[in-house]
Length: 440
Ligand code: ATP
Ligand code: MG
Image (tube, rainbow, N blue to C red; front, side, top):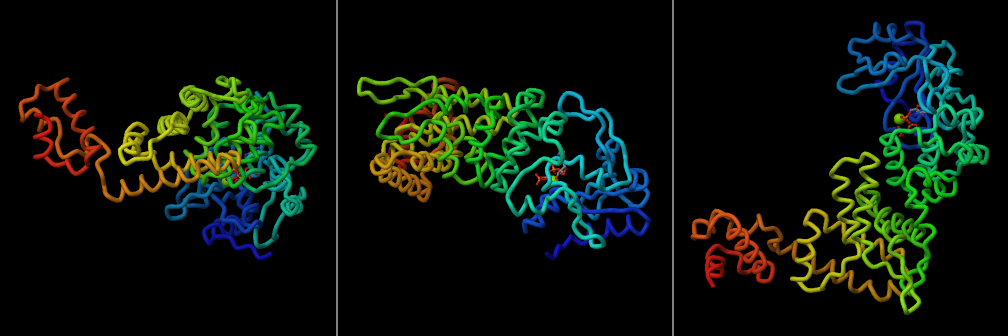
């Protein structure tokens, strides 16, 4: 295997070695290059102490100096260089009380979470693989370094990292590691919501979002997204469906591109169903109003996970409208675009396609043509550039005031009336025509 490190990383390692220290690329970047993937970032581990690292490079930033991490700047790019360390005793399932520097690489590798993340590489020594990381990479296994119970006991975030890597790499989790997860999963309550969000987001936006079922089986979702467990317990006895709500949800995630908003919308689109489940007189499951309830639940779940406002707003709106019935006329589609929002309508169409892909053959036979038609009508509307927002009409409030309407409610109602007109008859979107219309 030929491993190529970027020039800047080689340069940093060279300088450290020339000054009598050891230095290696380490962790995720070694895992990724062995897998033939491009690493997100390059971490370097070294026997040099933080002050020594700082003295060897012109520009450094004290990123986490108390934990031994200094960022070395090369042009505009930063590389984290961390002193070999042993983590001291852990507090609250997450934070080591203190860190102890060491001069042994193996000690540093031992504190890392999984064998696949515990390898180091430099050109002098090649790959340093003390814990069977290469074999686990070949076998597709996520396995703790050392005793899994101890490792998850130290830091419960590793529980989420295990499924996150399983999802990103399409790996299994080793049975001993699984057993320890099941045993210690409730320690997840000690992990901050922000950290949970980051790991969940990486899992859900990975190539294998279906691994959320692995998280479910290991008892993880019960602590971080109990609403998912409830979906797994709701059958869908109807001609439209062939899976329970949870499994259907997973199918929808698998059938949508790995865009952050779309994946979260897919995960949460039916979150309102468990509370809205009724068996109708026809003997089938119905879920009237699950979109509206789902919107509220999505807001509370996403806020609870400390997501940014943009995510909360976009995802909850998609959830609310995912099951809207849309009339398949120009005007019907435009009304829906206005209700849902121009910004997310293309996403709503994608969500509807994915939703359908997770339903029964009966649904597919009966809905595919309608969805195609919806998409066609929408695309034509966009192509023609029809006005879809009040603010893009040929007139605005100031024009109406100039024509003699009273500022306030009268102008507001006037604009609404004209907008309706423009949605129905886009050819009337000119100042002259709208002026005529307002006075008829
Ligand atoms: P990514 O591709 O997401 O960056 P990564 O493996 O590089 O994945 P980082 O969070 O960047 O993950 O961490 C870098 C390395 O630090 C890991 O590969 C692992 O060796 C170690 N590490 C990170 N978090 C932990 C943890 N919670 N417990 C033990 N070791 C950890
Ligand atoms: Mg990394």
